[in-house]
Length: 414
Image 1 (cartoon, one colour):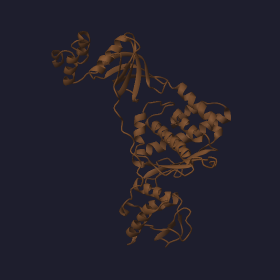
Image 2: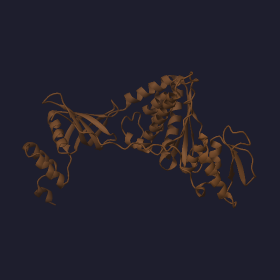
Image 3: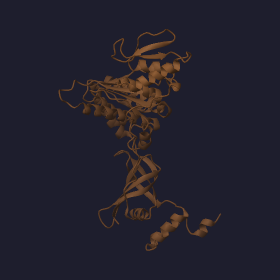
Image 4: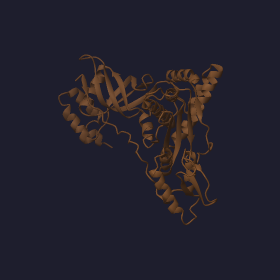
């Protein structure tokens, strides 16, 4: 059995963003937060009874058009009725800003806004391609922030990726601009504040390091920037954001309900990058990948694929990692005896444990210098099934007998 493949267990996909945001109950709406969100998303206050309510109109709507009456507090008898009317009007509005306000009310979120300054598209050019590039760059930027929130590294590769992607599952995406220039993402405060705060520090650190490199021609500022959360993943995301533009910017605004985290500015300055930054960004990304050292690991994993070119000699094994490394899968080249152990472990459904060095080449997906390949101890029922399966291979069965805990008498000793 020199070539055998078992299909990996499918992983859950990210749930789709609902087409319409949930409409919060008027009893849950803070008028001060509502007013702050309306102002943030371009609504204009055009009078109203001072100290009682304000009249708000949407972006681009002339005075006298659509308007909302928003109470300034809940102290007045009709405040609940007014807030209910506001929620209904926002839910029925076709304005993108109305949807963004509802999201901010329903899920207290930090808002991150990406903007690309792109030339006017030629006649007939598909707008969806520009939107897709923007969405891809925005997601890569967020993922870099989530990786840095898990741990600082110049190059993360596949490490922590599952956890970082899981941290983004509850992120809500606002409608992209029709020309692919602007996109807003809502990161829930409850589970995503660490991501937004880390990303903001990392973008500032990256901007400072690029400025230093362009002024001096030296790159040591990128080494110090790792502690701020800068990584190869972030440099690649910013390159994707800036390429093909006249410039790009990322702006963050804290949830008005939660307020800024301790030590952060109430209104952080946006971070801007230009095409002139691209050489420094690309060079820094390559530097991070070269500099990140291999990591000694002892990994436990289920064998999902085995391959070798002939009936004897070394072979390659793919493991679905269960413990020991923050990656989903690794490949390992094993000598003949160790390869046979992996084959038998695969046949009886046992994971194996192996020591080695997780290499940065290829994104921390390969273990080199593999040693101490052993099947993992299993419970009694699994042990009996294993021994029955291996009766025709007495030598290997004896090996598994020892690895799984030894004879019954020895295991019963205190």
